Amino acid sequence: MKFVKKQSVRKNGMKQHEKMQKTMLRSLFLLLMLFSYTGSILAAGDITLKLSAPANVSKGKPFKISYILNNAQGQSINVSDKISGFNVIYGPGISRSSASSSLNGRTVQQIYTETYTYTLIAEKEGTFTIPAATIVAGGKAYKSNTARVKVLPPDKKASSSQEYYSEPVTQPDAVKDNDIFVRAIPSKVKIYEQEAFIITFKLYSSLDIERFVDIEFPEFEGFIREDIPMPSALQTRIERINGKNYFSADLVKYLLFPQRSGKITIPAGKASFILRVRSGRQVRTFLGPQNLMTSVQKNIVINPVILDVKSLPDGKPANFANAVGNFNVKSQISATNLKANDGVTLTVDINGAGNLKLIKNPDIKLPSDFEAYDPKVTNDVNPTNSGLAGSKKIEYFFIPRHEGKYEIPATQFSYFDPGSGTYKQLEIPAYTLNVAKDPTGGAGAATSYNNQSDVKVAKDIRYIKDGTYRFSRTNDFMAGSLAYWLWYIIPTLLFASFFIYYRKQIRENADIVRMKTKKANKVAIRRLQQADAFLKANNKEKFYEEILRAVWGYLSDKLVIPVSNLNRENIEVELAKYGAGNDLIASFISILDTCEYARYAPNQEYKVMDNFYNEAIDTITKMENTIKLNKH
Image (cartoon, rainbow, N blue to C red; front, side):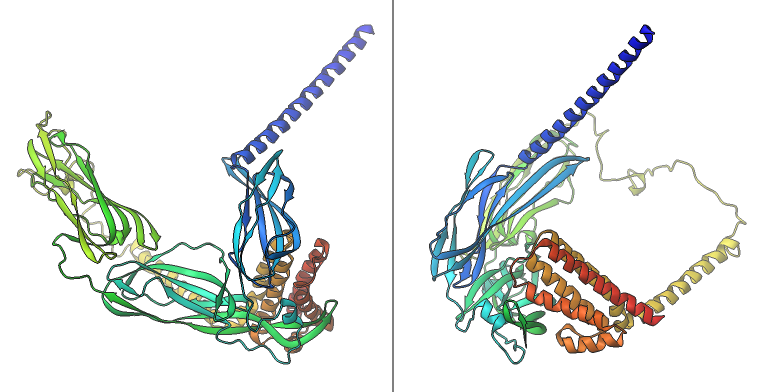
């Protein structure tokens, strides 16, 4: 009995020891994960505090500035309560985000960002400095940059945002031509043929833009075009034109090279936008009377541009390489002392800014005994105001076949400089090659033939074909066999099936009303998903704006009425035709009204916004179910 008891105690002790080992291993694993996470954050980059502020603002209009802390958690931020020229009305609003990247299932980079946002109002006109802020992170103090902000005068006929939404109006606002327009702005109007210039299509608007309907930029006949990369999101700023402030944004930029001289017109383009304006109706809210907004479509014409393109002056050098800009040339050769049948590369680098891609390759004169290949051209360029800046590398590869001393003569490279209006010449130096005898006698020499079949006649001897071959019987015919008829029957059946399906798709796609009605629910769900993203980011204004777009778009597609013609009266009538009950109609109207008010109301709790999001989904789902029941 004593032996059994001791054995039992020993087993219990071993179990406890195993549990302790497992607990220690788990703790060690968690510590390693924590160190790995911390190390990935540190590896993401240095800790920085950066101030982001608009370049231009309007007097009396609120705007936002942000202090962005990267790769650390801030403990306290110190921003001056009094900023010269501005009044701080709110802040800081704090938001946090993190992003990570993985390689082979392992986190290699972790980026953490904190944003401290303040809302300011400009009190007077002029140019003022937003001061730097300091923040404590990880026991150290960090300081941001400063920013210069220009305060523009208010619009001559401008009213405050509150007055705009509460001031009584009896009819919808008319959209004037100077409320929204797109300008085509060239960097130059007098240029030389082949000289680079930039044309920018810039949007100006004093109204809220709900969405872009369509933009047709003109064709650039007579030009070679290079697209200039643009940010994924429009970068808006405030500009003042004829006493009126506009929100402006660059839509696209192109780098153009005129290919002929004379007066060249870039034709007009077209654009169409959906704008939000006051509808002429008001409702009472807890904020007082508020104007209901409506959507209207505005079609505009983009101005044409006339350019004066001058031809290049007379006296072009014989070796002119079609180069217009500002360039320099470098060259190098891989070897000057070599053996026969060894390959040599002469590299020419053309650097500078201009029409680099359009430059002709310099004509390098090689000795007749050299076997030359087509040059390899590599362009490494980026669009700039002066043209394509960077380099054009041309690699000339050739093989001397016999021993001796050979001279590659100097080559002139000529280009036109539009700044001085003159032709300029550069020189690729001469090279002397000392070619020794090939010790192998050319036995291992490479030839320009890729395989034996490329050789037609070489020293009166043809290559003998080798390998295995397939023979067929003389009385074995394909015609009349089963495989012969299947080659005709199967493609015919496939073509007939495809033709019937294609005609059916054409008939269905031709019914535009049916297609829009069919896809209305899917389009609304996609927009609601975007609203859910704004909900999670706690972006109230964008959340309600996206819900409003989703519901207006759904009703427009489902009722087959353009958004600009929708109003609460025809919504009620048309929904009733689809069999919607009074409760369902009231739910749609309530969603539209709530979105209009809530975008300009004070901040609401997340729970309220979440409930409202679910209500919007339920209302659209009920409408779809009602339509399905009525069909059956």
